[in-house]
Image (cartoon, rainbow over all chains, first blue to last red; front, side, top):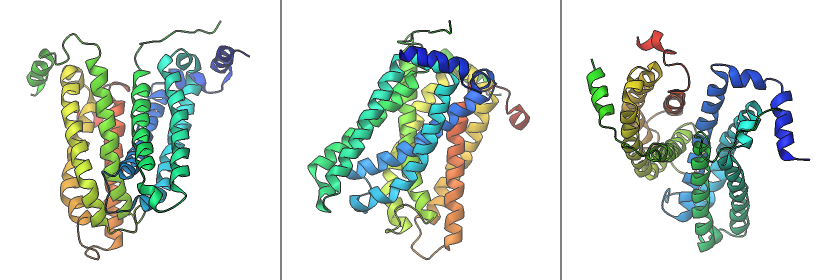
Length: 167
Length: 164
């Protein structure tokens, strides 16, 4: 089945979509929740990554920073993902036509894989937390998340946008 | 009273004819916000008795401080041209003014009360005090971030009942 058809179907059939699209505050509040939870999530991710790289929070061992911040990162992540899905729920076809949106989805996949790599590198030993590989993966995480943030922000402009309509 | 000043700022056309400078500044501003909020949150969470609990709050705060100040510097450096580019729109927007008032309260709070409590030696303040101070900080700064996003998105007169 064609992905565009799926998004077209969502635009017409998802309950509440029209309300979110057309209300004065619905979409604005959703977008605000998304951005604020992103700052929360990414702020704590960056603090952890900077420790992995070895340039911040040096008074705490990297092996302690990561698991201690994880539950709080996940709180932000949950709110960010739920509000993000609701944004797409509200305007499926708008996002379908945004090239930056799809790049962002691709980079999020990479960021998830990178997080798995960090786990694989560090779970073996205490010393592995300060390894070269952990530093590189930490730096990659920062680069990926800043790029994801930038692409998310760029979705708001009409660059590289194709308009799709309900037929 | 400030309107001529805002008109003058807008007249400077800081971004010139570029259509890329505005979005670029916004992206750096948002990135700086994540650094600022991250370095704020690890300390506030510690004050709440969560997060990096194997260290005293003052140790976490000392580590976080350069990133907090660096983030704030970058926020200021990018926030000023962002306001200048659309100064009269901002001037006439009640959401902008509520954000600015809350921002100044949050800044004053962060560099007085919160600083004193976060950097205090262990046992100087009770855990109840530390929790209230951390929670207030989180609420205020998330409020600043939320209001910032709402400028130009919700109607300009939304908070006129607050700031006239």
